[in-house]
Length: 210
Image (cartoon, rainbow, N blue to C red; front, top):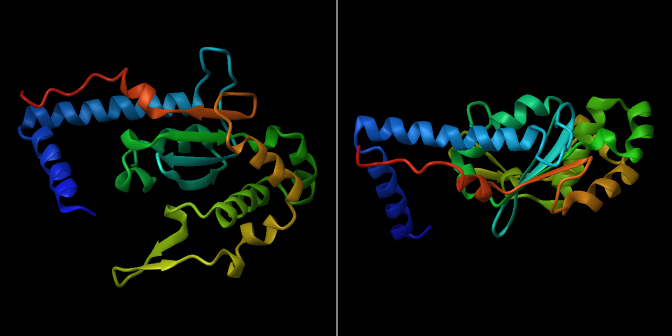
């Protein structure tokens, strides 16, 4: 990390929170943006897209590439919290203001999900898809884990014996279907694509001079 970039980041935050009034304005502005982003990820769009709820897999990108892959059984709650960061860790390190794209796939709506849903069950399929995506794409945040010594260890998905790892090998057709729409750039029945920068333009910039 370049020292000048870190110092500039720290100085900008200090300026945004330089007074009680400025700090309150910054807090409110950030939540306004996070709320808009959560609505965009889960709510019905202007073109009549269906709302996003239930089981999904999702990916978050920065400009250089894929940052994070996750899954949830409660998209209507988890995706709203994703940019807020109260129970989801991602936004605490990589603020949603710098995310370039989020893709959410309602995989149970895919025809290829019918057989694995019957044989494995919805929870196992969701975990299996998450494992398969992470193991194939190696998103930065998923690829390492914190240690109690203050360091990081690499994740070896090939050695995992988790429920997702066990189920992942039985999802070839569904995984291929998910990958076919993983790079989508527009919304569809099964896929929601959101670019946070578009929402930043709709959010009032905080006034740090209060």
